[in-house]
Structure formats: C-alpha cells, structure tokens
Picture 1: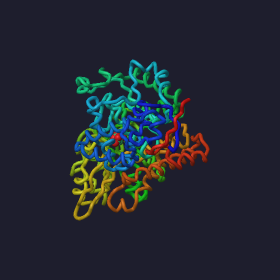
Picture 2 (picture 1 turned 90 degrees about the vertical axis):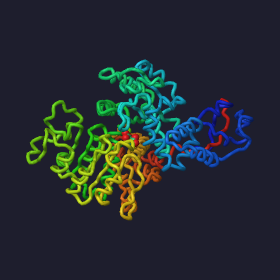
Picture 3 (picture 1 turned 30 degrees about the vertical axis):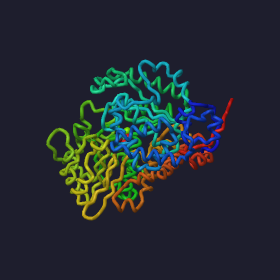
Picture 4 (picture 1 turned 60 degrees about the horizontal axis):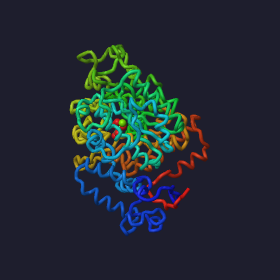
Amino acid sequence: MQSVIKVKTRGRSLLEDPYLNKGTAFTLEERRAFGIEGRLPQRVETLEEQVARAYEQYQRFTNSLNKYMYLRGLQDYSRTEFYALVRAHIEEMLPIVYTPTVGEAIEEFSHIYRAPRGLVVTEDNYLQLDEILAGYGETELAVVTDAEGILGIGDQGFGGIAICLGKLSLYTLTAGIDPARSLPVILDFGTDNKKLLEDPFYLGVRKPRVRGAKYFEMVDAFIEAWAKRFPNALLQWEDLSKSTAFEALERYREKVPSFNDDIQGTGAMALAGLLAATEQGKTLTEQVFLVSGAGAGGIGVAMQVMNGLVRLGLTEDQARKRIFVLDSRGLILDDREGLEPYKMIFAHPRSDLAEWEFASKNPNLIETIRNAKVTVLLGLSGQGGSFDQKIIEAVQKNTAKPIVFALSNPTNLTEILPKDAICWTDGNVWMATGSPFAPVEWKGKTHIIGQGNNTFVFPGIGWGVAASGARTVEAEMMTDASFALAAQVSQERLDSGAVFPRIVDLMDVTDHVARAVAECAFRLGVATVSHEEMEKRLAERDWVPKYATYEYDPS
Ligand SMILES: O=C([O-])CC(=O)C(=O)O
Ligand SMILES: [Mg+2]
C-alpha cells in the first residue's frame, strides 16, 4: 500500500514520470521539496477532482477508438489517475481499454502510436536480451505475444503489443499488480499480414514471419534471459497462433511459472460458465459438448471441460466421449491425415460413428449436433454468425434448455447474436458471449448476457501464483479457478439469465479466484512461501490507485 514513499526524482523529470507524476495533486510542500514550484497551476487538487475532470474530457469523445487514445494518453501521463478513472467507471471503460475496442486499436496501432511501452524482441536484438533486461526494473509479471493469433483477428504484427497493455491494465485494476512491475512483451518476428507490410506507417519488422527452428531459437533466448533476470516472475502467453501456442506452453512451463491465457484462461472461464448453468455442475456430466473451432481457445476449452467432467467423477475416456471438436474441415476424427498433434486427444474413432448419418467425409456442425445429441454449443471459431437458426433449432431438439457460448472476439466475430439466440429458443437458453453485449428484452423479460471472457480468471491466476510463489502453473489450479468463479455467480444473476458475474464485481471475483489458485498451489506442493506469507499477500492488493506522500531522498 502506498502511504509515504522516498523519491529521488526531482524537477521536470518528476512531472514526466508516469509512475510518479501527481500533476495538480502535488502539495505545496512537495512542490517546494522537489523543485517543481511554478510548473503547476496554483490550485492543489485531490485525485477525485482530477478524475472528475478526466471523466468530463473522456465524455467529449464519441468514438471508441478516440476514447481509447485519450485513456492511453492519460496512462502515459499518470498511472494513478488513469487507474483511478477506469476503476470508477469500470463497466463503461473496460470495453474501451480491453475487448472489443482494443481489437480496433491493435489494427490501427501504427497509426495511433504515441509513446514507447514494454519490451520489443526482434531478430536483431534477441542475442542481447541479458543486457537489455538489465535496464528494466524489478518485474513480477509479463504478458507476452507474438501477435500471430490476436483475438479472432489473426496476425496483427507489432500492434499486438496493445493486447498485452490491455491485459496488464486488468491485472493492475483487479489484482493490484504494480504497473511499474509488469512488462508487456512483443516478440516482433515479422508479420504475414499484407496490409501491414504495405502500410507506410507500419512500425513493426517489415518482413515475413520467422518460423520453424529459428522461431524457437529466438523464443528460447528470450525465456533464458527472462528467467535469469526474473526467475520467480509469472509469464502469461497471449494470442500466439495455434501452431506455436501449445508447443510454447509445454516447452517453457517447467522453466518459468507460465500459462497460456487462450488455452487455459479461456478454458477455465468457459468451464465456470458451464458449472453455473448446470447448478454448480449437477447436470454437467449429462451434457454433450460441441466445440466449434480447434485453435488455442477451442482445444483449451475442450481440455478444461474434460478436466471438469473428471473432477465430477467421469474417467477421462468417458469425458472425451461427450466432447466433439470441429475445425474448418468438420468433426475431428482419428483417421484424418496430417492431424495436428494437439488435436489428437479429441479425435473420435471413426468406428464410433457406425450409426451416424452424414453426407460427406466428416460430419459438419449440424450433422454432429443431430447424431451426437449435442446440448452445449461452444463457439471459438472466429466465424461470425456461424450458429444460425437451423443450428440452434437442432440443439433444441436434444435439450429443453441449450447452453450456447459464443466466445470469439471481438464483437463482430461472435458466432451468434444474443438477441437471435433468445428469439430462436423463445428465451430458453443459457447464453454467454466473449465480448460485451447489451441486455435483450424478450416477451417482457430482460435477459442479461454474461460476458464469458478470460478476464474473470487470468488476473486471479496471476495473483494466486504471486501470492503462493508457485513454481509452476498446474491444470488443477485452473479447475479450482473455474469452481471458484462459478461460485461467484449469484442466484440473482442466474435468474436474469447470466452465467457470469457482473463486470463491476471483477475485483471481488478476482479475490476469490486468486485464493483458490493459491490454496491449490499449496495442496499440490508447488508453493514456495509459507501459508502465513500467502495469507498476507492475499489480504491486500499490492497496488491501488492512490497518491502516496513523497519525501525527497537525496541519496
Ligand atoms: O482478449 C480477450 O478478450 C479474450 C481473449 O483472450 C481472446 O479472445 O483472445
Ligand atoms: Mg487472447
């Protein structure tokens, strides 16, 4: 907690340091002690007064991307003011600093770029990372992307660093990670996005992506330098493409405490929603699941559903028989030539389909729904609109109340619009979406749409790992996170149709998830601090947006 701190920086540099700057909130004594008298308006303000002005300015922008730019500018000016503002208006501003507007900001990044942030790793500097990292202050958390699989919008090159900025903002807001101790990292190994390569403003490495052995040689070098400089820090992989996400996760998970947000975070979130929709899992083992999309998110969700079913008493084999994963070529079956290794675990034997009716080589979406008697649809395909009326009606034949999660982001890639799902099922559906959607009025009832986004879990995972000093991030920790999140969905939320908590409760929810993750680390023996120390670290957020009093430190 900030109260009184010693500060060495003086004069104009103090006003230009976003971690220390208080602007008009510097007291007259501080202005004198730090040599900034005369550089500020005479009036001394409180943080609340500053935030009120910033909010008035924010409201003058009518376009989301402009709002994003304003907030990022404020963040570059003062971390405290930025976080205090977003915290006061979290429901309104989360869709700006995060999904969906962050998607647009990523696409436009080289055009809206203003100030440098984070660490940029390239083919030119990856051998100097020891030296480079020595110049960074103490760090406890990195969000790392190579930007090949950003949200559902694919290869975004250098702009992908903005997803790291967005995720880290959430870590600070909800888990109290000190912004000065968190690091966004872009592995800028080129891009295959033609539009970016031809854009005169593009700031990233203007070359095709490095792939294969050279790619992992460079990531190895980064991990080695990172682990040497910050051995206990947590690393979150974000938005790698499916071709590297699984391999990177496995390759480094024993080397540094790390997890993949799209595989594990999204998986843990989805299982939580399913638990909430089935009375904390009471009927989960009776459901039949269809996962549309076999990327990091799709396979991650399938794995976590499997882990959940096993926790509820099924064997892995029994669980897998209830999960059907489809990619662009249809249902994944064991006789597919060239099947990617990470998909194999969910490949059903063709011999199991003896009684099925389907037209071509692999059953498609509707054929799988009909033959397998699917009751739960999980959309992670990035194919906007792919759950159409026929699809929904087919699921309705199998169950009184389908569960339909359209988890692809941003908004325009959602597999189904909530209003359509509610209309086509006459209101009999458990609906959730990855991006935020407004409530839907249907026959006099207001249906609230829960936001099925990994933001409900990753900050808690990070805090839980930090609090327990966990050496590794284990699958069991994710499952405990799912149960903890599901338990935070109130009866009132369920009555209004939502299977995820309110965004305004994100901080509370994160408390519970963090505790579950930390306790699990203890149970599994991967924690490295005492239970007492862990309790201390969980009791209070490390950093909250408040001003400390500064005392000049001349040493
Ligand atoms: O960033 C988000 O909103 C959720 C996520 O990880 C993704 O869609 O890749
Ligand atoms: Mg992601």
